[in-house]
Length: 179
Image (cartoon, rainbow, N blue to C red; front, side, top):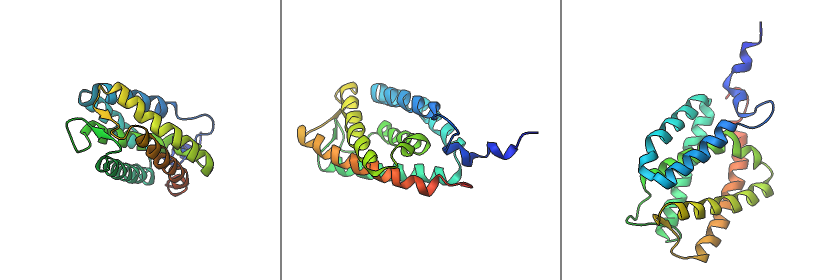
């Protein structure tokens, strides 16, 4: 008989080989759907989020919640400083809140594992984060935009570089055996 304990969720965050393709592909599809269709994509994206959370150990679920709240706080500050803006609202839209939760899920499941060396966390965060926002602005039909133009991008590069370092460092708190 095989060892049943090998199916314990603690190993879920550190697979024997490869990466979590469901996490990467699921996040990218949910990101595209939410950015392009916004409120129309909330139900399927929420279902995917709940499924992903179900698969995680408790410590990793807490990490998803904390990363989501921190990310929303950072973006709320960026909106108040006019670094990013959403047409017709001074608040973050609901689909964007869900996008942060989905990013946090993907970060906990897969991305933070790549960000462990601080310099790589900074490099990938500083490039991937702002480019994601630029892509989102292009696909959102003008809902997301950057009032400060180039300065918005510079601020996003710095902020997302720091976020990348923090995400890589935070993995040591939730990806432990017995989580």
